[in-house]
Picture 1: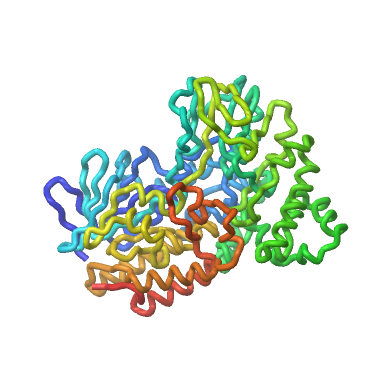
Picture 2: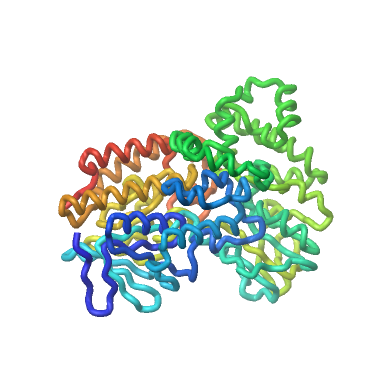
Length: 545
């Protein structure tokens, strides 16, 4: 597999990786181990990806640190010490910098390099990557490690530019931080970011107004530091922990955002529970107790019953009955990714916190002094926009990606809906690998476990191509359609497709994006088995030449 050649002034590589987050760093390490000439193109000035940009107050992972970490290197496992069970943004960013330096990856990363377009050249079977600064790079293969939550949604609210105070965006939060002390603050959005940020901002602000369009289901799980000797004990058990993780449905066997969902399947149904049993559940386990029933994930009537009980659990925490009622979600539980919170509901008992339920009157505009709604005007000094992401496909869709026969990726996904084969390749785009693309387990799993499997599969594929003297691999249209149908069949009739659920899981949170479930819900072990079989069968479903 010779290095791709380009015209004068271009960089020449076997593989170019786009993005220096979790996926990109491991991808670079893997292809360098194969002896391939490779580099990363990264638009930021540092590694970290999502964990570099999303540094808002309270930013934290919803999976335990010993599982939300690389498993491929025992040296890294033994040399790095986690300090928190559920790691915060700063610790995850520090970890990724440690890995970067430990593996000497920085020398092959081009920072401040914002890829604007990627074009496949059919005669040479190579990709040309053009940057916003006018640079050009060529490579035989491209690995898009662009992240599933890396393209923020900027809300289209009239007057945003007129605001005279400080406007902050959670997805590009100031690295130097921000002091909310003495300020009247508006937080717009109650997804994971808004839920995590609210208790922290409320402690500093003179007054916090939380603008809620869609109430969230949250699962209290207060973060804590490891006790002395606790992490060292886990560190000695890494082989056991990784084995359990490897066989886990979601790629995480310990505390994580999906723990309650997995526990729920093992519990009795709510539809046959007595009133006394229902009340006992929330008495014992709070809001979690309202949701942990064996039938809530598969029966909409049971799901609605759980939501009513959830509202009762909220009312036991939140003192104001109007606020408590406004915090009850109006969409099915588990049709969105579960949110882990630390004192979210308790925050509404503070005298300096006001919930603005936008279901009672929407935002009209941002004004120079605050936010005008159909319910009235709110004067604030700072606005924090926590308005979500164009997930899974957004990072690639924002680029101009042109494949075989001039096919445009954005137009393809807009017209037919986001689709790929295994989440790894898109028909019509040879030699372009995607890490955790549509149809992969990314949305409903431990992302690090899922990405490791992808990187290792791609690495094995590249080694196979080199050994056989091939220079091109492309998913076939028929295989892609079959995989999309298979992935869709797994969620057919489930709460994940309920019309009332506008989630990044199905793209409904993005105006104009075709509504389709973007993940794979068969579980990581089954997904891994299918990928292994496909490779063993000569990369069935791919055209190799």
